[in-house]
Amino acid sequence: MNNRKGFTLIEMLVVVAIIGLLSSVVVVGLSGARQKARDAKRLADIQQVMNSAEVQFTNAGYPATIVLPTAPQSGETYYYSGGPTSSAAMACMETSENGAAVAIPAQCAGLPGVSVTPPCQAGRPYYFCKTSAQ
Image 1 (cartoon, rainbow, N blue to C red):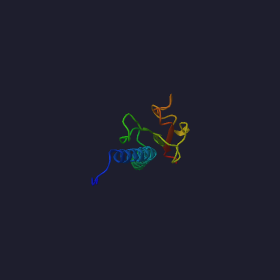
Image 2: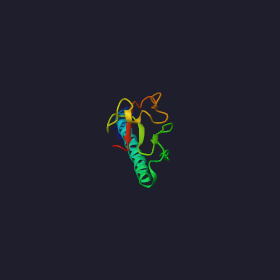
Image 3: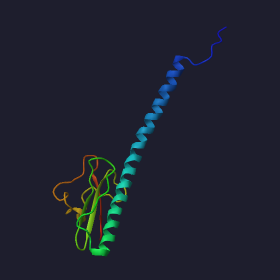
């Protein structure tokens, strides 16, 4: 009479393979959520930059330069430009949600570092621009 308790090697391998398959499906599904989370941070950062510019405008006009927050990924830059009567800020986005455009919006085409070539890196082909006129 064979009275051994436990799992066979085949049973263990099947369980490990199923867990591996399920975890890979979850990881692939989360990549879109990560992109959306980074884009949400970019939107919040641009809104904060414009709020800061509006506060400074009430005192002495829009600032020519402003301290920009740290972008969600390294090597990424936010763009800002201000003058006596207007200001604009722009971020490169990973998804087209939240009003992001495929081309650089006209109101942001004149920002420093933006006018000649699209400043966004590969994989971030969308632009979000906010101006003081909005």
